[in-house]
Length: 537
Image (cartoon, rainbow, N blue to C red; front, side, top):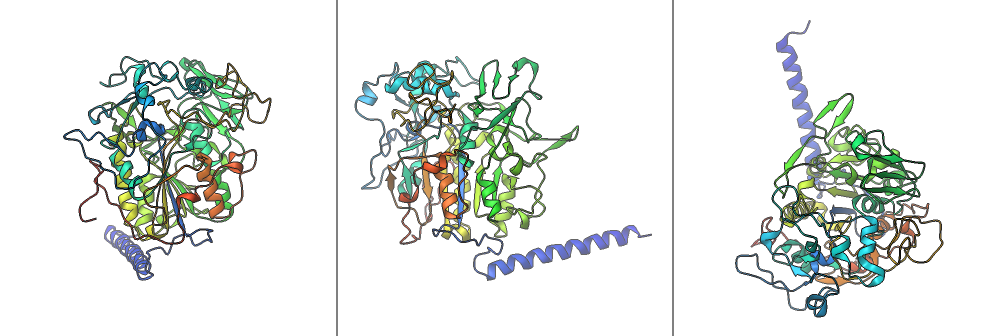
């Protein structure tokens, strides 16, 4: 029989040995010069060895960059002054500001009104807002129309025409000054968050199958072989996801669910043994009930209400059986994060990424998703809360040894219905009862049966690339969409294409935003509150 003293002594020795092993491991990484003994070493076609995709929520291009690079600079706000030679963007000026065809003129939202209400990013409503190319029905189609939202935020349908400038989204404007941004980047299709998330990882929102098993009766969930609908709208039509059902392979889902067929980029990366991971705030379960994991972490949102950190329908890989971690299992070890053999199957909590980064284990391809209260989604996360997350994250990333061969992409999953003045090019037609871009039941005039519910491109979205290899103070007007990020991953790590009709096959390139002839010695550390450069950095 082992005495308690001997038991604790044995445990203590084991702990000391484990800690010593970890210390030796980290020291070896430091001696190697990069603390990257765990880093992915696969061959790439560019100098980018680590891609970090920060995927935020629900912002149109005009909503954040309408008047870039000119800010109002009222007293008391963080001042923004553009560098000499800063290029203009395709934003709002002249008659678009003073004689706009919409029923409300575009207007600047002051920093004091950073908290706004959620708008209407539904698949059909977004198309109706463009009104056959006239782009004049935003207020009637996607404006929230609510008198109040949760908390104390006041709302009206005309809010959809509001935009922020460099006195509120200061950090993003400063990143654009030192790195590269696009003013011609679009959602792959119309619709809310989930189609945008699925397009990022597979470029194929077709192949969806719905389930009503978890949906409360009050939702009036209805499902057929190729459709799913709730009392407030359609989630799946003709086998294509156009709404926000939650992922089938996720214990933390609580209502209507869906699963996706086909491949995603995770499958391609795993097949080539390229390390990767999707890290979302709140993914770590707080409890288990009836054998199911529960994601109970919460924070107070910008509307003053408690909000769950983890939002299942923002996690695209949980819709695919091959890449899901249904029980939200933790990584087998910090060293195993990003690897095929890890029990977490590449799906992690945001905290796991930083644990791995501390020992040099930065996956080659990393997707970072903020906890809800910091993801930029109007209604519960204002631009100032979003700025804190983005700046804290990018400050830390730039201090990693891997920064020298890293590219950070800041992108968004959908527009939330916020006004943007650019009519998206129609590159994919669809004729379903939920389409309305060029007429009732129409997105273009094609009778193509291969793309039902995939009308696109959708609204214009912000896109920035931060890297020592990114062009400086550069605005790219190459036509790109959400699958351009997917295609960069495919091409850089040579993992092949998704197939199955994925939009990656024809997506525009991000390469114009880089200059691979030279690596700049650049690091832009910003203040999390003001978004302005920290003195001495």
